[in-house]
Length: 339
Image 1: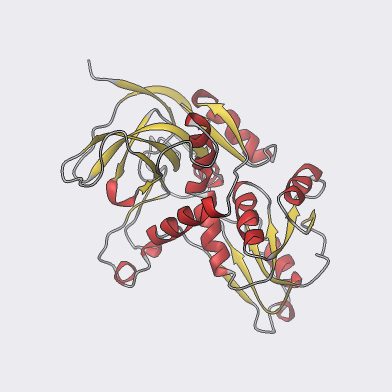
Image 2: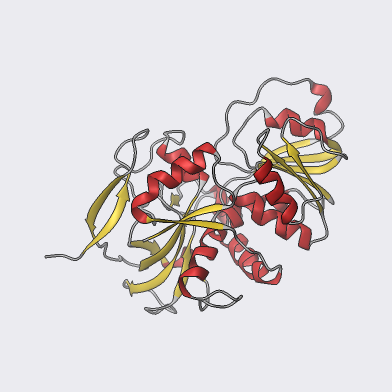
């Protein structure tokens, strides 16, 4: 009998994940088999499960914030051996041939593959990944954490951290920065921004005093509700909450020449707004996916800050509970599944 593994699978959008036993996948040309030790639960997973992102692979094993070790290498994999600790991100592969890939903008590839969306991901004991798109993470235990604890702490870096870092770069040299939605990504970005000498203002759901206290504890200069104006003009704002109504709110909060960065892969419709709040050379831009260069830069920077992730661990079979807690806003920090 072939070896099997535990997994949580999505059979249809809008229904809970189902626990299952699946065959352990075999790595193909250029791929590695990864033994998953931790997989973060990202808001993108929620968009996939809730049907807000179109045409996922079905049935699907979600999850794209994967930390694990190489269990086996497929043909053609060089420079990687069983036992190596690696991270598997959202960007699973690119075509390498379209205009965007040729221009060095692989995050905009016309024919990409995404872990936990078009490729089975890490809500399982094993997954396969293109060896060219994974990141070496070095030995667990560096930075004061050992073994499983280090893997749980690293998992949110693989998307919340990477996308947050790309969004921060898109905000330019902003000295006064607003973060709308203080969850997994914002709590990482806030630490990087404070490390860089920026002033951070955190915006949360109205009445979410726990998240506001969390933000202040991570170095934010001010924390309040998303329907409040900040105590000073912002140079830039990053929107992590997938709420379109926050775009005009952020435009009102940024100064002339300021930038509003929409960092999510999905957002509710943006309501109409007066041209006057865009005028003054304000900019609204989105962030799409990530490049491997983003990952290399951020993963080199994170230990220098150092970034400390705040996580809540769930067993693999409690994936639906973790998604529900994320959906309801019950989490402070990031959820991580531990097979």
